[in-house]
Image 1 (cartoon, one colour):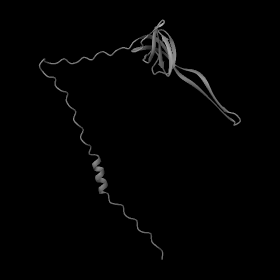
Image 2 (cartoon, one colour):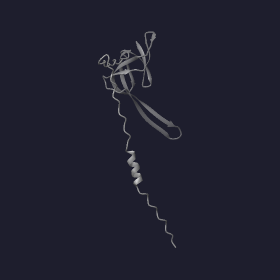
Image 3 (cartoon, one colour):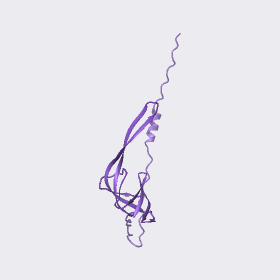
Image 4 (cartoon, helix red, strand yellow):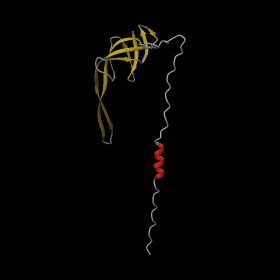
Length: 156
């Protein structure tokens, strides 16, 4: 069985046992990750519904790709810039392609007695209005108005 998954903005065709290098995914070597964005799945020549499928993979290593040289030049302007870049990659080994694991259903509490009505959950008390704004307003009212500046003296 094969699947086409999308991770890191790229699409990969994978099958169980394949090794691929993808954009960096958080985790240490030996951790198991789940690639949930399955676009297409199939077996042989037939295509199956990819809804609800996940691809599980094991992280082999965290590494970096080959160095790419970025060279910018504008001719006749004496402008040259040289930079390098190494992309962080994660090496994955695809372990299985299958159904998404569903969460176990939550157990509900059984009623105590057949005729007894279930007690409603206690209501949360409404938060009291904050009184912090009032002292600020009072403090502003208590301040004395600023003294007026004296008129400049005129020389006679």
